[in-house]
Figure 1: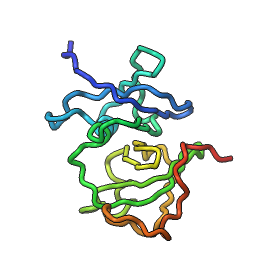
Figure 2: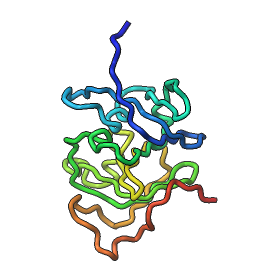
Figure 3: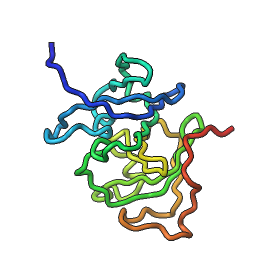
Figure 4: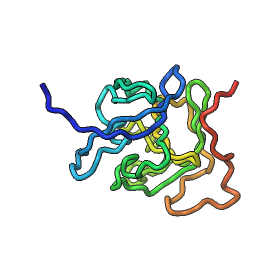
Amino acid sequence: MPPYVHKMRVPVTLSQLSREAREGWCLVSVGSSAGDRPESLLELLNSGSVVIPFVPEHDSNIVLVTRMHIEWVAVSAGVDAPLVAPIDRTVTREQRVELRFMDQRHLEGIVQWNGSGDHGRLSDFLNGPDDFFLLKTSGGPFLVNRLRLAETRMAESTPRPAETEPAQSERVMPPFKMPTQTA
């Protein structure tokens, strides 16, 4: 039998295909592949694992959620940033977007990525190897499964360096709303 793997609970709201979003905890490893810090949710979601351990809020049982059926994971307020994404993650570009899911719900926020090498454009980044990416919203961070998106609408014509703020005229998207369904 494999050795016991110590896990930490990270409070989240998890949305899956054809289900209402539910609150609970994702379980991340106490040690990451780097070994000197806990695994982040982004690392867990982009791992090769087929299932992700999740404890629903009103259930003491662990549910193994199929990773590819997760639409998004909203990280609860107060969760330390290194538990959301690796602290050594490089961000050089960002783009305001509206993400529309297959069921027409949508999220609005900012995608940040490492634009060096072959990932200078948002399309290059979204065509990369990772299925989940971080979306910064006014409601907090969301980890979004790119394979569950119907479309990504860019709110600005080109991405900008990550450190700059958009001019007032560039802020064309309305404030954040929880994912909504449009008829």
